[in-house]
Image (spheres, rainbow, N blue to C red):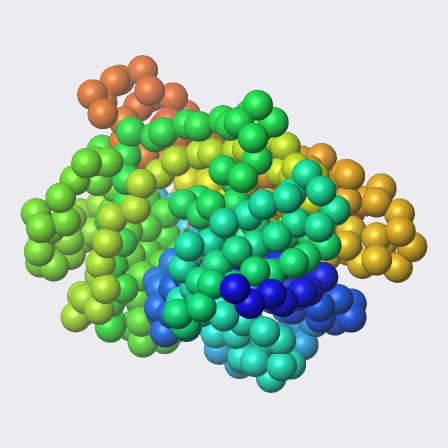
Length: 393
Ligand code: APR
Ligand code: PHB
């Protein structure tokens, strides 16, 4: 058994763990990042791609903005389609000039890994048998296996950034946490396609056959989604069927959807999840380890970044002064934003998806809501301020 020591042990090299390591380094705090997957895998995992203004600002302020400024696509509006109608929501006009930027999550991950390696910070990929202990003491330990050797990482604090299926959350005794789960009666089938987007701005479509979304990644690559049943089998969706369905659901008179080769496809469940509190003793959970939102509001990555921003500041204050006040308030500070995002994502999801059974009461309510959005500036402004992301205090 080999023993190492660091200040903060970070479990997971997704956006949460990597951004935390980056922010801590800027504060002069040491960390070690442990990741079960390979570097290749985490850099190419296709996930979401909408960065809120606050996420973009943080990347710029902390020296991560070079490629983002070159390749990120700044969007100042989104389009909503339903019943053969289209309505643009002018996000920036309604939300004080704030905008969203389209930049794939794996690009954020690549930039963060490059920054980590340039700064000589330890990051170990392909680790196994990760286990946390001593989180109730002031010397917690992460045990893991790497390159055939059992290792022990002694820390002051552990950051559990290992996603929804990680081990960190389970290290909190069941009596010390409450979990809130909500399953939605639909999933998304997503494709990445080598075809120029047929739109300049994201299109969210409500259709009786189900929701559809036209997003993008670059001037050459489109990202599109359709609502499917949660237990849908991807084998039933050859590419041609996906394009046909997208064409119907996104359809608008005078508008044409370009199709092209599908590079990647998969089905993702829609769920909401929150664990409270997000901390126990010397363990702090961040990102998907602590909460999941349905993808409709595009909030998952942004919440993860918001969590670690709070955590890095709290740790910096604690190391500088010994005052644990901000660390103690970590959960409360994060959960305000998390529950706001849960509400926004659930509301957007309920407005835009087709519910099984096609209950007519629900359908008429959805139309009333979409019509309100199209005609009331107050309704559109509410969507806009949530979509671009609430400012940090
Ligand atoms: N030990 C070490 N690493 C682990 C372990 C473990 N036991 N279990 C999982 N991991 C790794 C995963 O392989 C993954 O790379 O932890 C990482 C968690 O990263 P993400 O799942 O991307 O989660 P997070 O960093 O919280 O990012 C926020 O919100 O909506 C989503 O798509 C968005 O993935 C993004 C997430
Ligand atoms: C994406 O581009 O992957 C994307 C965009 C908007 C969403 C969800 C995902 O609401």
